[in-house]
Amino acid sequence: MVNLLRPPSVSSSSRFSTVTGLWRQQSLYDRRALKTGIVHFGPGRFFRGHLAYIIHNYLAQKGFQEQRWGICGVSLKSQQTITRLKPQRFLYTLTKHSSCAQNREEAEVIGSIREIVNGREKCEYVLEKMASPSVHLVTLTITQGGYHLDKNFNLDTTHEDIAHDLRNPSTPTTAIGFIVEALRRRRDRSMTPFTTLSCDNLPRNGEILRQAVLAYADLIDPQLAEYIRDNATFPNSVVDRIVPQEQESDYNYPSRLLQVRDRAPIVTEPFWQFVVEDNFTGDRPKWEDTGVIMTSDITPFLYMKSRFLNAVHSFIACLAVRAGIEYMHEAIAVPEFQLFTRLLMDDIAAATPVPREMCEQYMEQVLLRLSNEALPDTTERISSETCRKVGKYIFPILQDAYSRKVSMKRIILPVAAWLLAVREEACESGQPYQAKDTQSAITAIQEGAVISGILGLENCEQTEVVDNECLQALRDLQTHGLLTTLKNYSEGGLLNESASA
Image 1 (cartoon, rainbow, N blue to C red):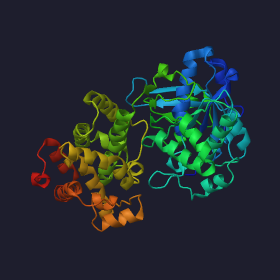
Image 2: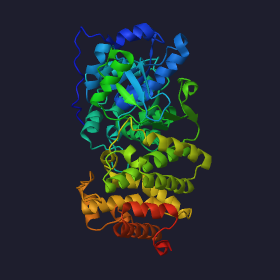
Image 3: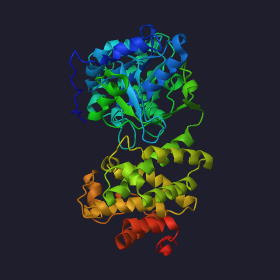
Image 4: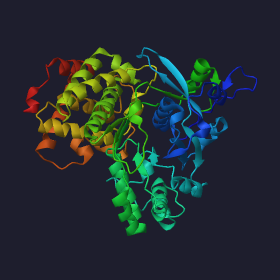
């Protein structure tokens, strides 16, 4: 998406200081002495609000004793971040803002990024940086599109960018191409491979990345693919922090809280989580000292993130668009929504193979985070691509609920509310609603399809139960309305119990 927001112009006579000036006064470590230990692809807002923030905290905690983990960012598409950050030496402000936290607003300058370069213009520079002995980590936040995957999460070798790199492997244009060429150079120089760490919101992101890298390498040089398979590592990770799209108001925080002007401020929530599979080829930051969770089994954390944040986010948005509620925090504040959501999360916990105490702690955090009115998020945005989210996040919950004999009624109701809004092209009040989804899915829903139909699932006992529950929820919503149905589903007086028989 093209960002049309522009940083406000500030005259040189402004009373505000610069970000670089404030860093010189209050620096927590010597950026001039930092070595590049991490090369990162995709230096966008989430990266600056998450990984760069975590590395900054790590450097600040270790002080002048640890100077090996500076970051070189690589941008392969938009150069807007470079344009904004280069004049202030890649420093920027980060403001944590929450209506629920004790300290509602906290701002600081982040100094972990040494440089950001245009990878397409400086291809050789980036490759040699990745082949440097000081670099131990290559990290990515390039979104799912940046991996060039097909619908089955395999590398799409027909994509024009991948096809270009396969023809020109020494001058790549994709992150996959850069990784393989840099690993080839390290192999040829008898160097230890770097660890490649995906920080994107993909299930088992390390495994997906490894598979794509090996598929690409095998087409170039099967021996190189074998070397990577035997020697390189691609840990899975779970990343979690809400970093909203840029707002005009973002520029007010650094000026008000720090008395500085900033061309590229980040505003985010206080909460963050970073869970990393401890599977590295060589050196790594000891970042567990700053709150990163290192684990041998990432599975419980994947379940919790996908089900109690991603799925619940979608569930609330589905209900909210039917109700005609614009913002997530407004929906959470409605008593019927709040009670229903708590009970819904109990059902999800019962259907999830994770210890109950882990679920309960995460559930409380999620409700608090989603009620943060200081970072307003639209229900329209969250409800976009709901069909994909039903397949990715919600249907697996229904499958586990079926096998564990957990009631599906509350789990299915939000999906039914969304289906009804799509089918009628309207909220319950009659206000128009236009779903942002694939046209094929919208057409199928308007023709009467329910869950198995929109997902293209084969008919079996399990899908019959899911579809029957969905049809019953649709009838309840049409007969009683949304809020009354939420009350009935929350109070135990679930309508038409025979539907689950």
